[in-house]
Each structure stands twice: as structure tokens, then as C-alpha cells.
Amino acid sequence: MKSFYPGDIPQKPGVYIYRNQFGNVIYVGKATNLRKRVSSYFQKSRQNNNDPKFRSLVNSISSWEIITVKNEDEALILESKLIKEYSPKYNILLRDDKRYLLIKINLNDTFPKLSLARIRKNDNAKYFGPFPKGSILKETIDFLTRYFKLRSCKVLKPTEKDHKHCLASRIKDCSAPCIDKVSDTEYKNQVDDMLKILSGDIKPILSDLERKMLDAAKNKNFENAAKWRDSITNIKAIFGEKNRTFRNTHIPSESGMDAVLELQKVLKLDKPPTHIECFDNSNTAGTLPVSSMVCFKNGKPSKKDYRRFKIKTVNKPDDFATMVEVIKRHYSRKLKENAQVADLLIVDGGKGQLSSAICALKEINFPTINVIGIAKKQEEIFLPNKKESIIIDRHSSAIRLIQSLRDEAHRFAITFHKSLRDKRIEESILDDIPGIGKTRKLAILKVYKSMKKLKQDTPEEISKKIPQIGIKLAKIILDNC
Image (cartoon, rainbow, N blue to C red):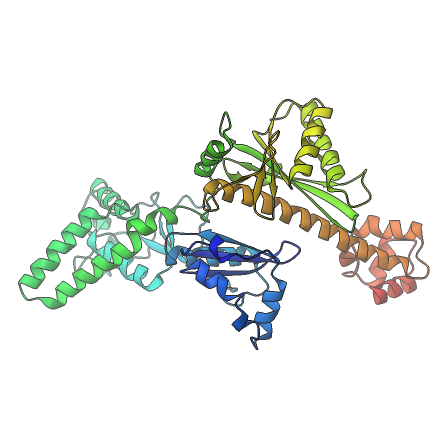
């Protein structure tokens, strides 16, 4: 398991992520105090926990990472999103498809109205959220609809006929644009004023509600005063400053342009490293060696630029030789294609891997490029022509960006290696079946690509697709798979 130092973890709200030895996410949790929560998993008093699931989880943890957020609500939303993205083995709750509510308004409608949704669709509507406090949100949306006198009817384009059956206009909750009580322009202005609230401009409405609350209290109408007070509390809770920045993001991350600029400052680069490439190697005792390259642009993953490599010239555990082969292959292709050059190259490793990468670039006469290495033990950063490593403040967004690249490259390499290993294990099954020689094995793999696909067919279907395989032999193959 990754070395655990409580002091490395801030006492802030956020999400913690546990991975197994293959780099797969096995558990995602949230905490109001990350240091206290994560530390609790590794306390001696909990090692004798009688829950087999808990013991299995702790024994499976190979590495961990954290993402800090501003408050508990953000942690709750982020935890839910990550669980849905990774489907971790040890997460039981939130595994259903429950989603937090969004506010939706389609400004292309004749008379736009507020509604709630759980899925953000590509329907030209405007969405705000997600919001974790569903019951409060529903109350607040009803209140804003009445406050700004927007329509609440379900009809897409209400007419005078619909107005006859409408209760909202009778109690003056709706401005009734369907019968021209207000013009299209006036109704649009009502909508625009409401949109300011959803965007976080809540001072004007809070001032108005506070005035109404004080007036009601002054007139000893305490029931109404309490209603205005509750509306004020709800609006602050949902649209207040502490929630606004988070709602406009998908998953909060310290990786972004702020981190890129911080990294430029820390490494003393001539320009911001907006295009970063990171390499990692993976093998099992020298077998099936592979390497991966992940790319971040503007501090975010650019998955279309990811690359993976089967190692061709190295047949034993040798990270240095592997790094040389991969760097040469990747950047020789870039020279040939005159492709965009990265601002920064990161290799997962210390001085040896860094030197190997630099030598490989020199051998192919690649233009000068910034290269650094990151060693896992103390998260040391190694720079060319520098004997001593540097340690970046562990709370810096720059080190978080480097770690994100390194971890993503590791995950990508491990996933590729595992897929090749599983495929080889499956294919080796064929070698043990009497009657399956090299020719038939190649014929099977050419048609089915994997044993998983083969097992989905009947003996008759297999025999039909592969003339060299009779029904009897197809049955034997399926019995042994």
C-alpha cells in the first residue's frame, strides 16, 4: 500500500479515492475532514474489524488520492459523480442511477417556465446545477415561479382555453401571458430577472424579502414573517456564493489553467506548459511489457491524444530501455508528421528514467523540450542537469497537476497491460484442447477476436463461421472455456 502520512492530508472537506494494485478505483468516499476520515481506515484499533468487507477493502488498497472541495455539499456531489463514473467494487450506496436535481428552463419556448430535471439533455435548454438539497430546491423553485409571476402550467404553449382552467392566475401567482395580461417583452423581462437569481445575483431579492419579513414582523404577522425568513434561508443555501462556483463545473479538480500557471512558476519555464505529455511503463516480471502516454491540455485530460505501446525490443524488466524505445517511437513519429510539440514531458521515475528519456530525444535529434521526472517515494521532482531533486509543496496545485498526469498514465498503462494479459490467458486455453493446432487457433481468433465473444455462440454457429471446426470439436471448445 502507498505509504500513509496523515500530515500529507489537509483537514478540509473533500473526496478520497482508493485504488488497487492494478490502478482500478475500488472505493470512493466523502469527508468533512479528509485527514481524520482517511486516517481512520489505517488505525490499529480498526484492524480487527469484524466486517469482512471492510477488511477486504483495506487489504486491497494499493494507492490513494484526495480531491479537496469548499464544503460538504460539493463533497457529496463529487462523491456521487465519481461513483457513477468508476462503479467502485466496494461502494454499495449511490450505485443506482439516482442523480441530483437540475433546474431547467427553455428560453426558446413561447413563455419559458422553470422545471426540474435529473439529466442534462442536448435540447437547447438552459440548465443550472446539480443541487444536492432536493426538497429545498423544489420549494424554492415554486417560490421563484410565484415571486416572478411565471407560468407553472404543463402545456407547452398555453392559450386562452387553458387559462379558463388555471388556478395560478386566479390567485395572482401568474402574470397570464397566455391572454396578453402582460406583453411578450414584459414576460421576457420577468424571466431575465429570475435568471439573475439562478446565476447567483441574489442581493436584490434578499433585500426585498428581508424588508417584507421585517414589515410582517412589525405588523405582528409572524406566520408570514416566518415564510419570508424560510425563503431567504433557502435562497442563500442554494444560490449563495459558497455553492455558485461549484455548480458550473462537472467534477472539481485542481488541474486547470491555475495549476498550469503555478507549474510554470515552480519549474521556472519560459511559457505555460499548456500541452503536457506523461509516460509510464508496466509489465509483470518482464512479460507483456507495455507503456502508455497520456496528454493534458490546459490542465485537463485530452483523451484523444492518449497513446499506448507494446514494447518490441525489450524482453526483460528494464524500465530504462523501455523508456528509450517508447520515447524514440513516439517522438520520431511526431517529427515525421510535423505534429505539435509538447511544452513539457514527464516520465514516471527518478534520475534513471529522466536520463533515458533525454538520451532518446537526443538520439533522434528532437528539438529541445522541457523534461522532468517524478519519483513516487517522496514525490520528488528531478530536473535535467541538477543533482538534487526538488520537493513541491504538497498543497500546491502544481504538484496536484503532476500527480494527476502520473496517476492517469499509470492507470492507462495498467489497464492496457491487464487487457493483454487476460487475452493471453484466454488464448492459452486453446493450446490445451486436443485437436486445436496453430492453424485452427488462428482461425478462431481471426473470427472471434476473443474467447468471450466465442462463448456467446452455439456449437452450430461456431462450426458455420469456421469451416475447420466441426460441431463436435466446437462443443469440446465451449466445455473447456
